[in-house]
Length: 354
Ligand code: ATP
Ligand code: MG
Ligand code: FE
Image (cartoon, rainbow, N blue to C red; front, side):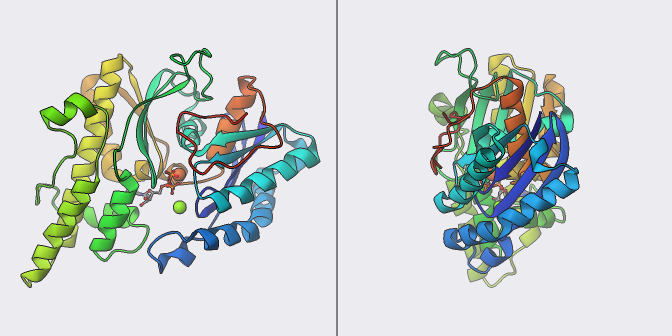
């Protein structure tokens, strides 16, 4: 199926067009520069930027893909989770297209889209798989048997089941906060990744959250990054007080190692515990070079296959929404109603809106 997907959950206005598993266009307009001086995304600014960028981005995607709107088989759109006002712009645009073209509308979960996008690069998703979703606002381990979320229709047989999640900060949030402490620009993930390449990852022994024997009893597949963030801030403050220079590269590398070590360890444990041989990694933090390397290295010795989309598909884009929409069509899922609401706090396991 030929599907156009719209993404506006945060600061990227993304419009993607796919035919089945083939990516035809991935147009993204970002308002990130407008937020940088505030050190975080400003919701009102993001909503306004989506309004301005929506129509030109749709036009650009169609042009790149070489398709007319009337060729489309379906429209999919992120209806949550994300910033309420930002989501509304995408949902309204998608409804207008679906209604005007007389084509089905699929309201899909942004987080499941971060997982589904991998099929554009590596083909049909391995199901069952364990998906590690690591992004700016979420960090979860999911057991995925059907990425459209339906599964066999029973509660236990749901297509996407949460095995664990962060109990405080998301991994991406930790990257962004630590970058700020180190005086690196927002969003900090890519800057830490870059700085860390010049640093020593064993220079500082930062804490690994929820890995003690006691914590593992209750939180085997959960994450915690807020203690790590505080430990880095304390370490940097102590350095500054002593008048010594802060070794930015070493702090970045040691912090990144602490995050990636725990992420990978628990993801592989989750896969092994379920007897699942495929680990899929998605979300903005999946663009991290150390995370990708460590996952591949450790998985290989366990006989687990790792799939991570290329970095450009890990961060927010419209192609991921189109990819999940195409799966909805291919698997004959029931389209969403034209009353589709935006849901800023949509749970990760709610994949398709009714
Ligand atoms: P969510 O998907 O939870 O709604 P989001 O959509 O805002 O959050 P994404 O676009 O999926 O987040 O990811 C953005 C996050 O990824 C930011 O926190 C950013 O710092 C982080 N990130 C991007 N590239 C890298 C990298 N190379 N290393 C580490 N983190 C990165
Ligand atoms: Mg963004
Ligand atoms: Fe995202």
